[in-house]
Image 1 (cartoon, rainbow, N blue to C red):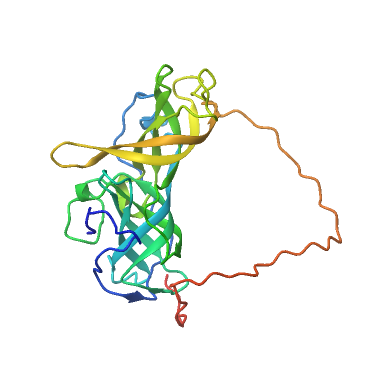
Image 2 (image 1 turned 60 degrees about the vertical axis):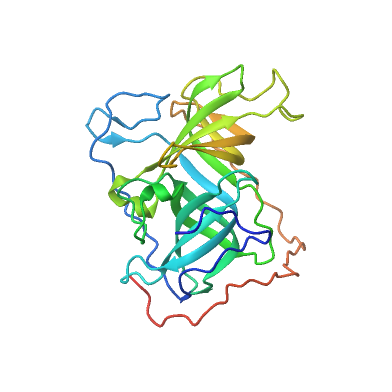
Length: 304
């Protein structure tokens, strides 16, 4: 997997792995449910529960990361699915902090030529690794802080990788500290590597900073324990276990948040007005940036 040494100034690390072209799989996910679950709610409703029919229900949620990452060591985890590439990824977290490492899968639907190593703007859905995660390499799951699926990426060879990533987390809140202006969110997220262990989990500590946007006494804390929150914030650090250095919690500095009620209440339906016809406004992309991902020759047959 990728080194936990920080990238250089241009976000470049030593080249590893091999170049792959035109690789991927069908992008459908098997969204299995865990066979066992708690029958009581804890941590503000963050644990799975069983309904009256005995079916497992997981709390609402999702988790994603967006930022500049160094991707390297491209590899195939299943030779029968040649369009799915597994990458090692590194995100910068600061001069004195260990970088975040991740194992990502990418569905190469456009049959692009993938370099052995490069700097990319990446958005991926993420979860914390589990023991049964399929990583496509002879490594321990604790060697990675995150696993997940790349849903969008663009090559940025000249970008400075020393940029803190942004996380978007949705899930129930708990452990609200109104004095320190902090709370926790436990999000559930399906990722390909977990298969039958889905959905994965992401445990996040949210800090509302002292800034002009969030003044004392007006900080947007959750109204109650268990309120569902949609949080956008900058990933500032990772809390790791002593010894194994496995990621346990992720600390996010809040940029924006919205809260939703716990109950499934009906919302009013908004019917947008029909825009006027005959508009002469035209939109065009005049400056198309170059990218290191070059479209390759399309396959004659599609995969099932």
